[in-house]
Amino acid sequence: MKVEGENYRTIWLNHEDNNIVSVIDQRFLPHKFIIENLSSVNQVATALIDMHVRGAGLIGAVAAYGMYLAAIESKGSPDFTKNLIRCAIVLKSTRPTAVNLEWAVDRQLLAISKGTSADEKISIAKATALLIADEDVDHCKSIGEHGVNIIDTISKAKKGAVVNILTHCNAGWLAFVDHGSATSPIYEAQKRGIKVHVWVDETRPRNQGASLTAWELLQQGIPHTVIADNTGGHLMQHGFVDMVITGADRVTRAGDAANKIGTYLKALAASDNKIPFYVALPSSTFDWNIRDGMKDIQIEQRNSDEVKYMQGLCDGELKTILVTPFDSPAINYGFDVTPARLITGLITERGICEAKEKSILDLFPEKL
Ligand code: MRU
Image (cartoon, rainbow, N blue to C red; front, side, top):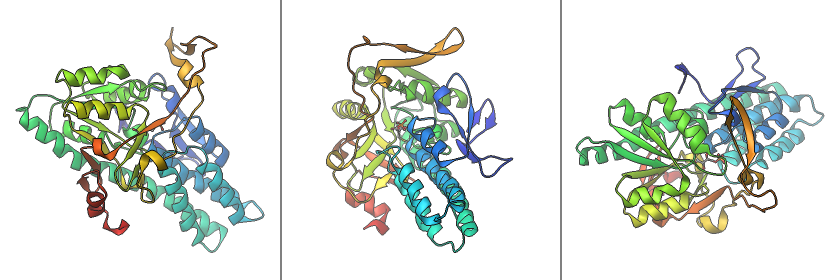
């Protein structure tokens, strides 16, 4: 997507040195556009844990590139395979909820195991990382092409009036390699001349909506309004929301969806107001091994300081401020699970289905 008119992906191999992975450091957006170069597995792990990079699809892609660096590092170690597995464990332990992380690392381990020499393993790891990134781009693009039909139908029912879409957190291109999941149908709608407006939940505590989604939409020229997290229900009651689209970090084979904390409350409000609630995801976000999201999805708990402190621009400088009493305890659950019964449909790269096992498997019969 475009940044100041120039096309970017969120991750790429450094053009001067292919042993370095370049990413957009999202901690400084929307105020500063900073590119970070990662040249070791430890640096990749830190970038994941401290959320220089985040969002399910991008977490998967970063882990895939991290495994490429792991293969390079393993060549210099006494036991290639032992070191590679150690690196895989380090990367997998960085963030527990987004299934794309383990999916990408396991895919790399399998691919690399086919190489017969260290050099061959490194070149397989590089090719697999590039493939995972390219697939992510293609899948997100297809999500847009399927999802736009829902927006188009609403637009026609409204006789071409603006379609108001509410989204939570950032499931835009910054959360993937390009296009995004929840935002991809919106970008496609814009391309086709369908009038849209996006309500952007700020998404406390880390404000991915206010800082990242808003920035993305601004860069693409999409009309949007940032709202405090608690505003969505009110807007829905008064007819200002036509549909909700969110992303997901792990979706069970029965359609329960883990996404950024607060998503469940939006789904409840949407259900109460009979507003369609869609979850957009590439197939890499399905966890085919589980059915019950409430029981089987591990919810990441992060440092309570993310709740107590906020970052913003003050006199031209990024500053962090305390918003609670210093001594008040806080708790920071990163995600919640929206049960399948509250989800109108899942938008995937293969099409749209109901959030039900049978309907999901009709699209992905190889997972029967
Ligand atoms: O904690 P984050 O920012 O990595 O959270 C993930 C998310 O971006 C959202 O939950 C998003 O909607 C998932 S779609 C990539």
